[in-house]
Image 1: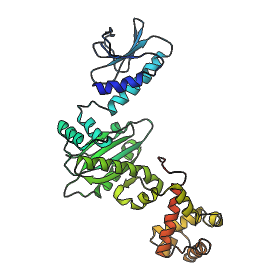
Image 2: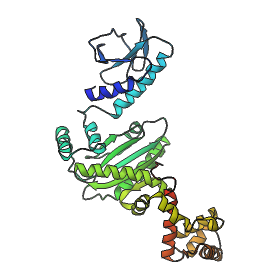
Image 3: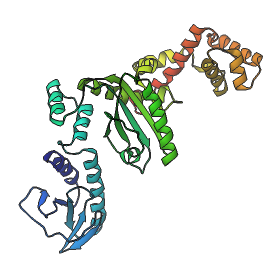
Image 4: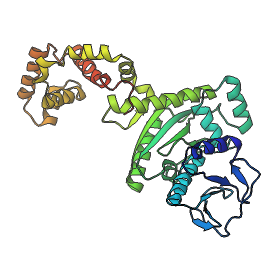
Length: 350
């Protein structure tokens, strides 16, 4: 472990009620940094706890075989296991500064100056000038690690870079060339979704940023993909792949302050219209909008008579004052309806 990572590990261990030390494979103390060595039990396996000479030892499942130790005591084995799990997760998600994956992660997630980006790219030979888009892939699972799930399933090509971010999310820097347009990233994500669902029975969502061919551009693409993942489930609840470039309306709506959203939403959705605009009516209008204001297609899809549909839309016009058969009123209805996602949700992650 390098000094930066040891500092993070020290921050994990220091608040614990029982002093826990981290030593290297030779028994030399790494945390705290002291000129002290311990005799380690021989033949320890990763994750195994041994008691020896008044201490509990636990070897970590990490390169170079570091070991945790603490004094024997009630519930100290549980404390060692808790500390071990936290440290292993930290080390896997934050590899050393010399690691290229860690360098890519810094390029995406940290606010670096132009000079710092150039030094980082040069030191680790990062090909930041190749056109790529950032795809955030999030696995919805309480047990599986996203990197472990996705690594064997993703069909990576030359120039693609996979960067673990946390236990549920990885960033895929997908290389683009003359034959691949950014739109194909959506198709790629949908294919990955299907593969993950078939192979692991897990669900996956994805945010896709714009294409970029500079270090700064990749950072922006990452932030776009991240924001798409935040607002996508709110404004596009039927989707699970969110392409930043195609989200102009959700992006616009998400920036409207909650108080203004509340005001405009209530112009149509209020006590006067609440009985009319029930779940059935909203489903009818939503389907009408999905079918591009086509009465016959909508009625067929809803299994109702065309005259029934006309009657419902007439009621909306009389009570709410909007004739959704006209494009301008239909667009206004959709706009005001979607403002509900701003109310009591502003700034919250879905």
